[in-house]
Length: 588
Image 1 (cartoon, rainbow, N blue to C red):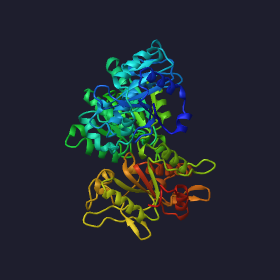
Image 2: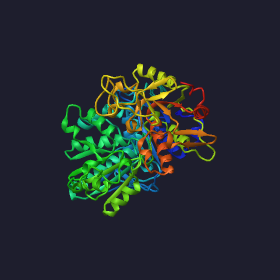
Image 3: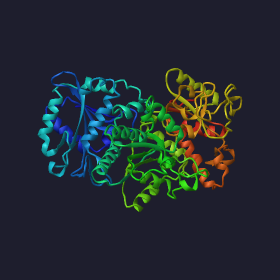
Image 4: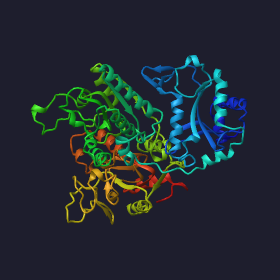
């Protein structure tokens, strides 16, 4: 059998599981079956432990099996949640390995054209070579242990003939990868018709935790709070929409709420097109100040880092003020409340959503509170390296920010001018890719008037472009700000963090303004360079620094394929070029 992985990677990983699997294949007479090790799933940082590739004994077609290898010796089922197990030393439930392998195979079948329309070619199984069946829960699927090695042999013989698997492995490895669909593009089908999203690992754990909590609420009225955390591109909104669709299909009352007007209006437009009832599923955090207790089965709070202290404003009559915090109102409104957040995406003063704040509120109400951390990356080509680079760029360690090392998954470029940045994006846009320009809020934002040219507020030298459009109406063919990220006519205007947060597009162009500049060996934030009115208030400089850096983190993590950078400050631009210059990251 051939190991499809660089030699140093094979040598570096634990050989125990591979040796155990190899022994089973040899015992089955399948020594010519190929083993593809640590196969990275398209558009994500997730890796399948092993994919076996060979020839099906009956059809003669290529045959594949995703194998998850676990050294676990025992596991305990999570009560009422058959797909989740407690496994030492994991502090929280994990997806059982059979479900993990089967979901990896389904995900791969949806992207690799070697499997398109032929999902029967691939399946999944788990091999816990250090456990006995008595030490494991019922996996409800093909799980094998050392004591069940004979059953594993029989399973493999049903999937593979004793023939060379090199051609099958080659077909999979060279299979064309279909483009990833953007979340908004599949939102309508996910919510209104059928399951579209294949959730993986911790995503599925979060999904199952919520569905189990909803079942408990139906049976006994038990209230539960579920907190789902994760950085940019970990799939928080995918989990939210998958849950909304499934709960809706189960006949439960479920609502999706955010603190983002742009995200809510966009999802209403796409998922709720032609259906007022579907549009009503999407609302805002401040809509629950007068909701009856437990009036909703499940309330899904997306972008929950944007939760504010209170839903009341200065215009709220005293008779309508509840005296409750906004998070209390959200928890009280539903039997199951779900909060999806990234604490490092707070970009405005007064955004207070944190794990500790939500958990302490739930505990004060004596409610069961469960936390799931999402670990995978589904944006930037699934490049965990890029997200780590962005984090180090904006929050450098003592020895300074890291060099960008191209990983073949996402592209990072530095433009010489805003015109070059726009030209690069326009060329990609002309070939059918989605692309948007964004910038820090370092220029005034004028109101566009019908019948007049769009005010070109973002001015850098002799280049000028308009911001996205204030208000709820299109002006001169340009969409309103809330739809800027999803309307093709949004290309050509510059978005800000308030119109970009929560969205994704193939190519992202980011203009770093004079509010964040590199000086010597560190970043300097300049609140006076920002035109964001929120910074005119009495806010500590340290908080302004944090919010400006968070703003650029959001902008830098919108691209699915790549990111083009331009800094208005010369020293900053040269630092970016120093950090990114390589044959694969040339000037745009």
